[in-house]
Image 1 (tube, rainbow, N blue to C red):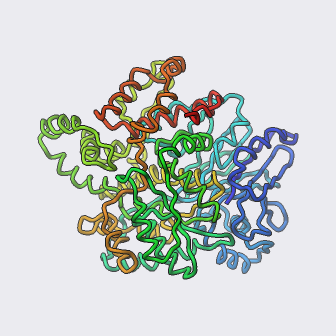
Image 2 (cartoon, helix red, strand yellow):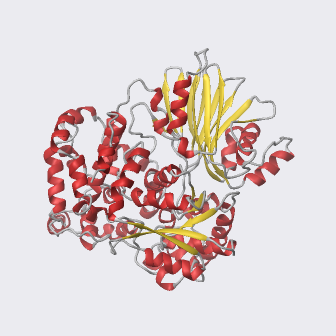
Length: 636
């Protein structure tokens, strides 16, 4: 696992300025503290910071092919690199290491872009041809590993994180259209980044770049619900076998490996099979919260005891909010509306004291259909047949006047989300259910000056992807959208960025190609068997996990952020959103922010998600755009 970065200018004859190279390297040093490697020739500079996992002694980068015409910088893990190396050796390729980096390079040499269909893992890499001065860049199918890039005339630059590209910019400014979409979604989906001129390479795509061309190609798209000829029992049994095999593959490591264990079904399934594969001592890490409505620590302890795993509990106290908010604001180079990153930061730091690699349960909801919204879409089909006066006016009127609760997924929260966007198509309504600000709210949130810079709204942007869907079943369609938006933009973003901030590699076995390809193609009726969400995985785990864990209500790894804003974090939020500062910046309307705060504090509405997205943006803007010191948030 590494951080990669580089730049090429086809017209520049000189060496790359050392101060700019140092700025790129130092910006993402935390991604790879074990070794720094660089390649420099006139007009090109490639580098990587390495976190050594496989072939520790010989796997430093860049790595060259036999005649040193090709070289690679790479971030990720390839779980089938052993078999790939054997295949390539038979074809005459000579290997100097046993690391997956060299396997990727030789696979590209042998198969060209077609090599991407042979890779099972998470990756982002660049291969440079010294003879033709051409670049080939690629990102894994789901976007588990990040890849940012920018083009400036004859120059192309890339990095694992956007902040490594900032030293190359003459002026750093926001992409206001991307920011507008962020406040609707709570994250930046590819190709959006918050910085003007910097883009993310979409998952499942590659770039071919030379002095005469810049081409982006898609090599993979997900497909949901296409396997119509399978029964429930067969699906369960096959899931067991493939899941076990995937976890076994992803446990490969030459450094200590542990688990993240929340007590939910996904991480518990990973833990159950990991313990079978590793009968010796196995360690897990989980988080506890002071607010019992959001705390799953007893469940994680139950699973650990049942499986015989040594469990470590990290207490996230209200007093930890400021420190971890500061760490996240210094780490994340894009605003992120999900406050989960705060406890994840503390959890990752604790896990790194014992391990370099952790297996996690990210991705289970998006492939096994675990979110309550999937069930809500069935009810939504019925609701749309109600008379307009009842479904669009009377019911929303009374629902939106219910007092707000701080409990996780409270009844009033679900009802208010359900009636939200009822005039939209089911696909767009799903984004309204999962989202943050509605467009009408954004119209009153931004100043006139900001709105002039925003020329694009979210819905037309989403509609382009909706129009390309081939699935007929509404749940399959929603699963497809969640996999190309929420999974990459929210779950995988935080999984990579926060763990790597602590030089910790997070793996996602539930998204392993073998399991993903089987489960994604199962029809929604099997995934929601007898009306139960994620029932295939639940039934697969019946022999392995306690009944109360398998059948407990879904919580998810969600901190009590709404309650924090009424208590410990209240003064912090008011400090960041001091009236004089907000008015002078002229990005937001102060009156709208004040209204959001007042309604939230009086429990008239739960604006917790929206307020956290504002807080994250404000600190990002101060840190990266204004270049201000944000350590003031640490002062109590």
